[in-house]
Structures are given as C-alpha cells and as structure tokens.
Amino acid sequence: MAGVATVDLDDRTHELVRFAARTFGVSEAEVVARAVHAFSERDAALSRPGRNPWEPVPVYGEYDGHRVEGSYLPATRRLTVTSGDLAGTRFKTASGAARAAASALRADGRAPAMNGWRFWRLVETDERLEVLR
Image 1: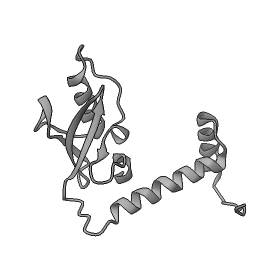
Image 2: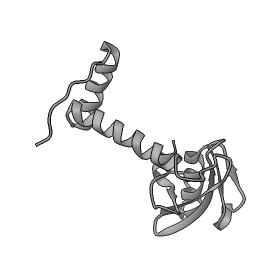
Image 3: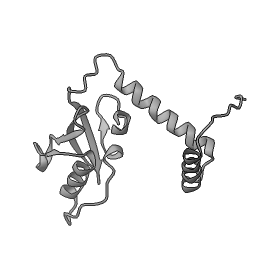
C-alpha cells in the first residue's frame, strides 16, 4: 500500500479542490492526483524530442461515425480542418473547430456543445488534444 503524504494548500485553493471533489463525486486526493496526472501528460507530450510549437500537429475527431482531420498549431492554439466540407477552414479555438465539424456532419446542421480539447485527438499517439494544453 502506498504511503500517505500531505500537501499544504492556501485556503482558496483548498476550497476549489473541495468544490471539485463534490462536483465530480471523488475524494480531494483524487482531484489533486488527476490534476498532477494531467500536467505530467502535457509535459510529456510537449517535451517529446523535436517538438516545435510552430510545427503543426495532425489531429482527428470523430462524430456520429465520421472522422474529421485537422492540424493544430500549439504556438497559436489554432486549428485548421483539413478534410471534408470544412477543409482549409481555420479556427481560433479547438472547440470552435469541433462545433463546426460536428455541425457539418449533423443532418439538421445544428452546432452541438463541444469541448475541443476532448474532441480532437493526436494522430501520432491517439491522446486527446488536451495533453498539449
């Protein structure tokens, strides 16, 4: 069994950790563990040998059984859709690109609420785009 360690937090941060724990139905320790894990994944993704923030990262998203390709530029956080009806369209945010892609694939054309950090995945590793956040 792993040992138990303590972490000192200021009152405001501890309040936020408590809030997140209640919101997601997990322990405060789980909130901290998930946050640390997310940062370590991001750091690992950004520190890959040869990673240049000005080099586009191939990404893809899937919606309703359809795949959409894109290119994410870490330095600007902009995403360009590279396949389908939106090919060549640039977006200021990953979420805007995700909403537009899903909307283009929906029969009714309505734009659903989308989190682009979770919708888009890195082609190279299949990780969610959020690892580059």
